[in-house]
Length: 106
Length: 252
Image (cartoon, rainbow over all chains, first blue to last red):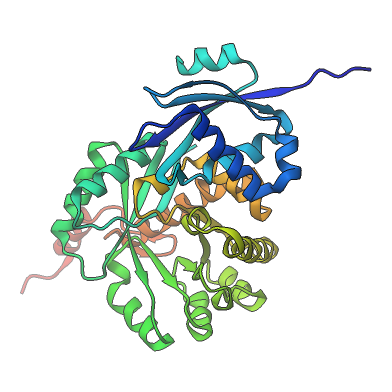
């Protein structure tokens, strides 16, 4: 029987002294996943950027619910984006995009 | 859950940096923050730091880090400074120092250098001594964030081994940031997620960031209180007892 894919949505806050582009943030997350978990781990994450607000520095990414801890650890390990010091914090996690937006007023 | 970060490493002369780091910790839901201070720190400096912390509703824990060259120096430092600080941590740079620190009840936290894996002396014997003396193993997360490639792989391998030993001997583990700037501070859930990299389950990781350090701070604050006499014994009322005692004294 077909089983529904369970996902998790993560609200991220990107902190850096420079403005970060959408491509740079996903590059940083993917690089962190590759470094920590390799290609096998990255393939299981099922990671996607849903939206990004460069002015406020907020981003929403989607991943597989099984890879939540993997993505969280990878995101926490980011210390630079585009060779500039940066930090990415997970503001919250939710099972639906609507709940996440409601919870964090994004 | 009250989260604790027992190891912030700002330059205490730089007020602006201290403020930034403490407010970042507050923003990330830490209620208790330990700042590493030099042993001869003046009282005024501590009051100033307490003021900065109370402004952002964070409780300050005074902490001192010793890095003695031999056990004698460690004992000397403990004798001189133990009662001035709420938390005492020892960087174990040699095996004799590690053994002495593990068996001394005045030492709260044992830390090992992240750079050199040959200087990580947390083995079975060390864990057994630490579990008897109620010392905890401190894991700083900033070396994990800043290192890359082979050095990070080696560090993770060491941490995995140490976590297994600590669990086996019931040695409490504490996760702290060890951050030197605000970019290296992460939220407690992020640290717990990073803990899974060295086989530390998330609930244990969260406990290492909340309950375990809270117990240490509570125990030490009780010991440092002027009413403390011994374990389980403390002064409840001072003034009345003294006045009653004076009445019973024969007048000379």
